[in-house]
Image (cartoon, rainbow, N blue to C red; front, side, top):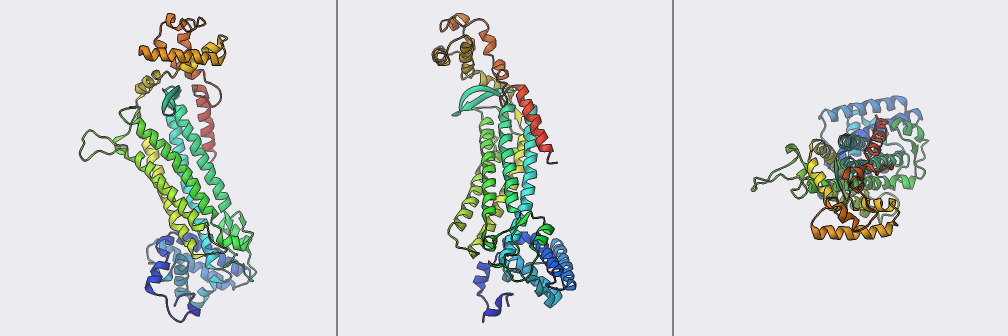
Length: 459
């Protein structure tokens, strides 16, 4: 008989058991479920709701069950439905009626709300560590390339010269925000729902604050209906992971472009590339492509969670069982992507000459010539028009701006002098942009140092 079967005259259909059971995926929460039950049992004993002898027996047996699960000695049962009932059934089989007292003052509704919070709290810590490792990889690449010039793009058109360090540090900022978002999400998640009961709390004098402290929660939920039916924290985490994967996908797209023959900016290490079954010359950026593709999978999990929750009345509904597979898959996908993605970046080779050559084309120093004229007293809009005509002339003559003779320069403005060649060199274009946040080497190095200080503050 089911642990909840007293009201029923016959057992559930085998197909219903299979349909209803969640043990195949929520079994991963066994540790959190047992630790939560140990804390609950300890509180029941200290509050005098059960005897301390019974509480101690339950706690010790739960610890033994945890050890047996981790040793692979326990096989979960589908007809026990979920991890909560499986653990309780094993407990009762070992210590009899005393084990039946564990569920005093508790419902599976607040129990599962507790377990998923604890589980995701632990997973956020793992993902955050992976993010810090990825960010450190980006800092190492950036520090080595503060003088590596390449074109910066807008609309995928060459725009202005920057450095590779400046470009990669933009991704550091994105991943830093991801790290911060995960921390914020965890702080809202870290609220104890246990004590909410099925939906209306309990008449037992539970000490919820004691359990919260033992399990490392910052506070307790303030409304029992919300305590069992809230899945905002699951949706928020899926949102955070979706934004994180969006950033991974953006960098993946650049890696794919840069490694193509058309760009030729980087070469991926053989260990992080694949070949073609028919074309022997191919070296495919499959890691970046898969990371880009798996982003959609994480987005799908977010949409699943939003759809599951969008029409649910208070309080708990069985629909909410669907939250776990979606968020577990999102977590697993991110954990799979981040390490291999970080290693791919760490091992790629930069083709600096190709980057520099690309920066020389596309008139990336056109803005700097306009600024040069502004410094000579010409209004910016007038300077903009002059340089626009100059670019058109160079396109017709099939030459770069800095290939023009001084006579050609002066045909557009008599303000232009010999010093123009120094002012529009790529190196000068980059070094002159030394405002905080700019691509000049000294400003990028300052940003890298601040970034390292930030990362080190979490070690």
